Length: 271
Ligand code: MG
Ligand code: MG
Image 1 (spheres, helix red, strand yellow):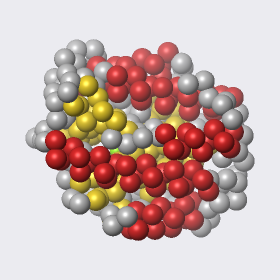
Image 2 (cartoon, rainbow, N blue to C red; image 1 turned 45 degrees about the horizontal axis):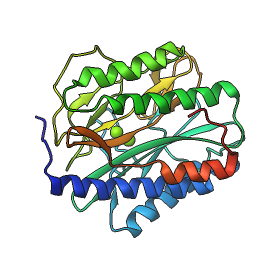
Image 3 (cartoon, protein in one colour; image 1 turned 45 degrees about the vertical axis):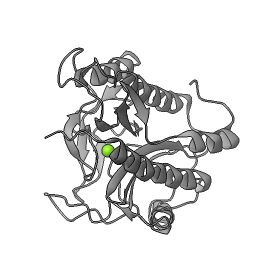
Image 4 (cartoon, rainbow, N blue to C red; image 1 turned 60 degrees about the vertical axis):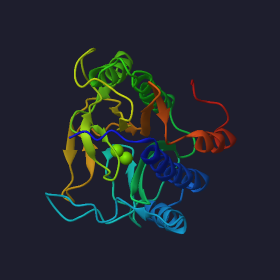
């Protein structure tokens, strides 16, 4: 069942998503070699709770194992999604880390993810980040009245596959509202003109998960962490958007993160 949102509900979703963006920007300031993913988790939880919200990921149920134990997912290098923060995972120069963050604020959810560089990364890895992020915006461009769900997935898929990268099939974007995961599912692949027609009030998280090599994944015994089978790196960027006045409105933002990254690394990205 797809719930279209009212203006008031979109306002509430905007606040929850803004808080996710604030949290990710706080993490951007401290991500550097030597930092543990557990330290990032502690900081994220503090920022979220200081703003009167709850980290939606903490205690998130898993039908195959224990609930998620932390406030953010920290997925390093070959981990595609759902990496568990740990004292033993120490970031090092050349790593990439995707941080997926969710909030529940005044009964509405925020959900956004950014893949950060740790120091200087190889040109191939930088290209993976650029292509994945660009594919997210290509997908968002199609999230307008008059298009269909398949147009979003098609835009993401063609952009990434043309670059020689893999599109993960096991995880998809989703509707978002009172629940973090609502209908419809929003795959990162698809056929033009197929699937549900997009309409005003539709609020969805679009989140390409893209691999440098083969898109096959394998699950770790912890029943959360999904790694690429070939051990090559993966990137993940996610925005929550609302379709509003016929167009996509971003409810989350990377603006502050990108300012911080530019200060750290200069303008090395091709977007
Ligand atoms: Mg997410
Ligand atoms: Mg999501």
